[in-house]
Length: 70
Picture 1 (tube, rainbow, N blue to C red):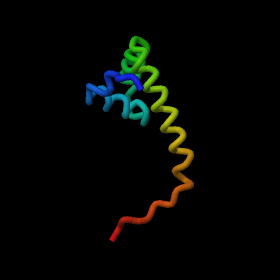
Picture 2 (tube, rainbow, N blue to C red):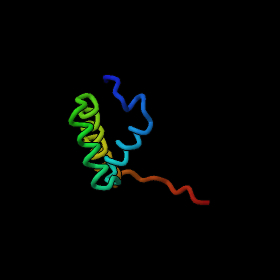
Picture 3 (tube, helix red, strand yellow):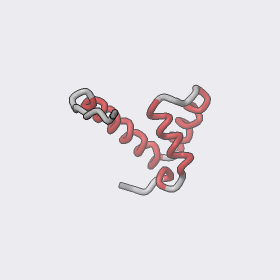
Picture 4 (tube, rainbow, N blue to C red):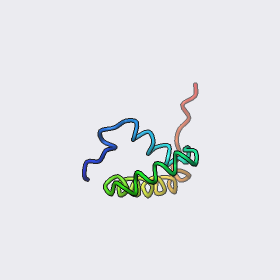
C-alpha cells in the first residue's frame, strides 16, 4: 500500500478516524471531504478504511468477546 499523509500526520489521522466514525461537525466534514477530493492517495485510503470498517462491523455481532470485569 502506498504511503499517504495519514502515515506522517497524527492530526490528519485523527480527522480520518473522526470522519469514519461520524464525529465531525458539518464544517469539519466538508473541509475534510474537500481535502480528500484534492488528494487522490488519501481519498483511496479513506475509502478502503471505510470499507474495512463496514466489514468489521458485520462480524462484530458474530464474535463472542469474554468479559474483562472482575
